[in-house]
Image 1 (tube, rainbow, N blue to C red):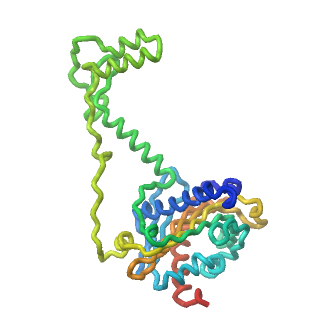
Image 2 (image 1 turned 135 degrees about the vertical axis):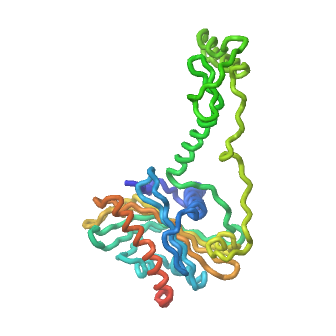
Image 3 (image 1 turned 45 degrees about the horizontal axis):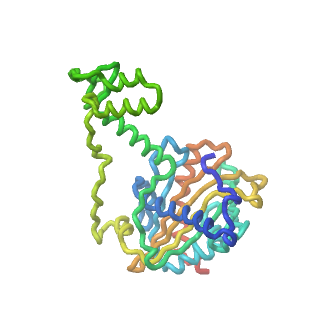
Length: 350
């Protein structure tokens, strides 16, 4: 299993421990902000007049990829809020292909933090799936609606970043002392330079031989750092140096760039994550699967509206990962097309 569901016991009571409850919810909302910023870098796999779909490159540390979908809609913010925020459970089965039902299991904070069971019919060779999901919603208006730049890298990408930092520190070592010989390292640790002929023996090796405590070792290291054997400090690698923030045009002919930098009047977020709940156990005839989505609807100053959805899922069962990935990647744009059709025909307002 890739996605670990949160346990019901991990959620503090909003009445008895409001502070910790708010902190937990804020963590998920912050992750939504982070993902909205970070996933903009993903390659575009499909683009139409109203919808752009992006997909994460293969990451060896993750079994399933992240997907992002941006839809520009000809609908008012309030109407979209009614569909995706206020009456979400009523509308979701109407436009989501293969969804059978959305059943509320518990209202922790009604319509702001709820637990739902979602069931899906089988398609092709897949068995029926059911999901137990925690759904968190928040709306932001005024100054807090302004989107701030984020620096989050999801999941194992943080591990990749740490590995890069470690490799950078190794690549840029100035000298290596191997077997008492001095080596320089502009390109490789195995490229020797002219041996140094210091006037005194290497204090580090001398200190190592006579050390009787950790204090002696620290003193030996300090003497070595001050000696002529020690390498001069290296400048910070260019890749790690602080870079000036890029300047962006206030207006652009590219709607994707424009959507990021246009002023936002108000927005709401819906975060859906896997849940482990005693009243939402797997049903007979269904395979318990897991997914998480991070959604945001933004209204810009000119009145236009955009809906972004970032999705990551694990089908579970016996279905191989590559087949599940292929199925999810093909279904994700179709869900967006189904929603556009649902809005266009006016079904959502009936």
